[in-house]
Length: 312
Image (cartoon, rainbow, N blue to C red; front, side, top):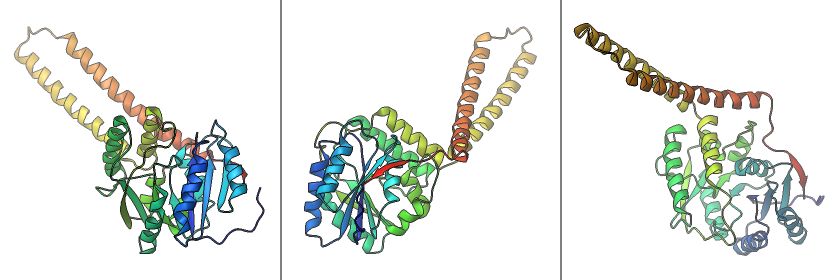
């Protein structure tokens, strides 16, 4: 561990790291190049989310070579947002930047993000002029954006990018959240709506493929839906009431029809369809309740967001 006295920094750059062994030296070099002419004192915090490659060894080497590099190694893989929370808890700068480790976020935009925060905004998100993502990820992002607008009361037109800047006071409020399932953008929207947007060029990934597959994307969406909003529960309530009302109407119609046509044979097909439909809705609602209860149970039992194994 580096026991040198802390640097006096004005900008902290937090980067969660996973499967980026070959990219990290380029990332550090690009950040150093971008910040060289800014006159800003900065630190680069690389959070190793127990990457299965040699990312932590590379981080150790980079921290030994560059005074502005700090490394955090977690004890187990916790996901991008929890790893980001680990980094936010260690920042020392007035302005905090969060960015990915794949160099699709241009470090040259950091100075503009810092300028936005210093102009009076609490948070500044980036919006991509030309997204370098697969079609399914673009569709998923569009769906996530629409859902976030409903569940989180997100301002329309605000893209919740993983490349963003925030004032230190916002970061300090965010890290007070101690639940096991963190969603950084949901926490930001809980803290402030004084948000700016900066348009940037989205870069192609330098090496390899992105770490977010369909399963992880769905997991992130579920975290947003059940950890920071009760809208799904209200939806289940309205759905249940609607089905109840529909059942009463259909029941009355069947009784009236039977009274007017006593010899009418009752059909079993409609009965089976009704049972399967209502059973499916009940299962969905029970699963939704279980998701909320499970998350509440884990929080009550103080399941940690992350555990830091080593810092350098």
